[in-house]
Amino acid sequence: AEAEVEAEGNLSQGILEIQGANAVWLDPVAVLNGAYSQYQVSYSRYYSRPSFGNLHSSSSSAGAACSEGNTRKRKRKKTYTPNEKEVLAELRHKESRSSISHAHSSFLATRPPLSSSKATMDSLSGNCPASQQLSTLADANTNTSEDAEVDFVRLAELWQAPLYELNYLRKSSQGAESDVRWCQHMESRATPLFGSFVEHEEEALAECAGCTFILPRNCRFLMSDVSHIHQLIPEHPDFGYNLILIDPPWENKSVHRKSLYPTLPNRQLLSLPIKQLVHREGALLALWLTNREKLHQFVEKELFPAWGVQLAASWYWLKLNDSGHMISPLDLQHHKPYECLLLGYLPGNKQAAYSDETAQEDLMSMRETVCYKAPPNKFVIMSIPGDHSRKPPLGSLLSQYAPGPHPVTGLELFARELTPGWTSWGNEPLRFQNLRYFHNR
Ligand code: SAM
Image 1: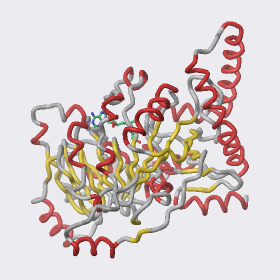
Image 2: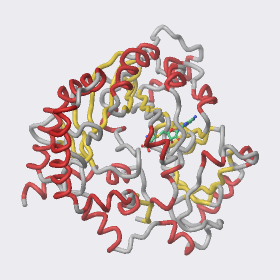
Image 3: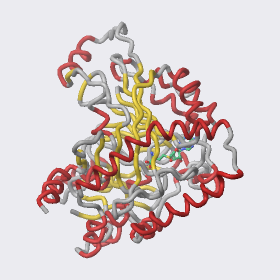
Image 4: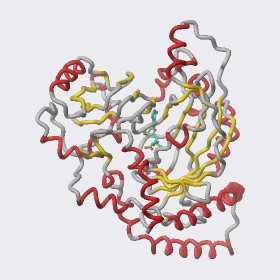
């Protein structure tokens, strides 16, 4: 019980170091909630995928899947000769296997509190999603329909797309008079939804396409197709990014079949202007990868060399169910319970001189250049997965390894949510900012 209480305490920021292992347990909802003062991400909405329901009963089902996988394997052994890619994939898996397995057994020994109880708390304490409460706010000047989702990718294809605007509703805090003034001021700042940077300092509510969105403090985003990505290139490397997180829409049969989001061919990723985005003092780049061997080969041999990235470490995201078991057996051939995050460094251009000396001094006085440490290799992050393809929030874990000024200037490419202090870009960066994913504090 003592170990559990201690673990609960350490988990308040959402991240728990696992003693004796190169690993952490991460509660994504708790991490995300560090970004908001008036609202909280709802556990029940974060884990609303039907598969999460299945996971509830799966301490035994993981075992069942295990034996099923073994049986399949055993049957196969007699007749099946793996091809070259499968042999390489198996070798790659073997390299990661012991770190992942050790991290998981150490995690089980730590017995940290899992999210399931919190998800239940969400509903028991009447913390219904904020979109259902919004109708009671007298000054919410919107016709928000409860729980609606906006399909930004489809909206962007309509002829009316340039006419869509993001309208600020009110500051999210409930102060009265100052809010009205702020509101009037912000109303004049309605911004085109597509193709324009939206940037602001305070937590706020905004409306577009009949839905309400919560914008965390100090966030910046650009909603556009990849054909407009050049808008992200800073005027000068001093204004570049020193931490770049990328989760590309890799071509993938399952994503295609379920029409989850559009995908991009590898050749389009090769031409992303990564070098032009980098801060003068360099950048740490983190790239999410699926387990396809072909993709690993592409990244190592073509993509990283084309972007100028020097590989530094491989991290693993191990997906657990709410009983703490892996979502599938570790050795299952085509459905591993983990995904890979590759970390690499991009050199900066220290020679680049900035002509406006005053602005440069301002920059230097605000932020401090820190000595960064190299990231650990084979580091394991364990968490319960939410929506399809939704990755755990890793900004705070990654930032300690970023070169250049701190706090970091982060950039997330192909983002579906906003992070304070970061620029988020993609064709749907407001997706998980919809009020339906939050409840009031
Ligand atoms: N990291 C995200 C998360 O944790 O929720 C998931 C990103 S998902 C793998 C890839 C994203 O890229 C999707 O939101 C998809 O709509 C977006 N995308 C696909 N094609 C795009 C394009 N041509 N331009 C911009 N974004 C695109």
